[in-house]
Length: 324
Image (tube, rainbow, N blue to C red; front, side):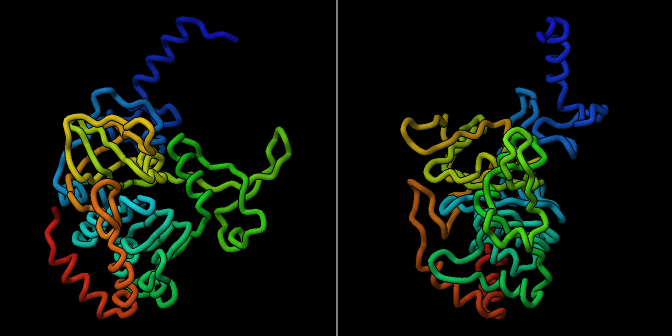
């Protein structure tokens, strides 16, 4: 059945005012562009065209966007891992966090070891090519420096869950987990039969972080951000979040997606704040800017094994450092 012109105009008006209405159509107070009431699928909803990201020093951006008890995703697959932002969270002593990441590696090992997290949602945890994350293991096995709840998924489940969150869906449905032991230890993995084909499908809750933080190569002066190389789930994680922070290597006049390359442009309305942090992904790499510090990943194994040596490293390299 078609839609009348009057009904179409009414629908258009409702879409324009989505930032003032929650999912149950209850009126809510007007909100600042780029933020959303709790319960509204954050960046899947219409956003006023004048909403733009703000350029802030990293310390100010973390102080404004990351709050105790938040669910926080620091994403970046292999490269563009936002280490500088993670270190600033440690410096500011933010605790009670649910940390979300497809591949928690050294940055989450450091944050967990500093007591920032009470829960970890993840799909693989380790020091790539080296071994275990010893601060993560210490928290799980010995509750040091505090107990850590874990919720483990597959890479596929995490990617689908981010995409569902970005689309404003409550859950992600996909083919997976058949023959896996994870459903036996993770009650947030379920199975349903497709109502049209009868095919059994796995279901996991959508991921909707309170804050997503990513690192990227460039932002332009209008607040648009270019991510090049392995893009991972950065786009979906930003779109799924209620608030988003991007650290970048540099600011340029304009960004445009390069032809023929693996890249994505995050428009300014998807981002709350941008912090210019050259080298903000070290010791991981930033495609086109600097290489991965493989020697540090190897050295971290010995640093993280011992609590006192770990704390000494954090004091010297995180607490004594100044946010850029």
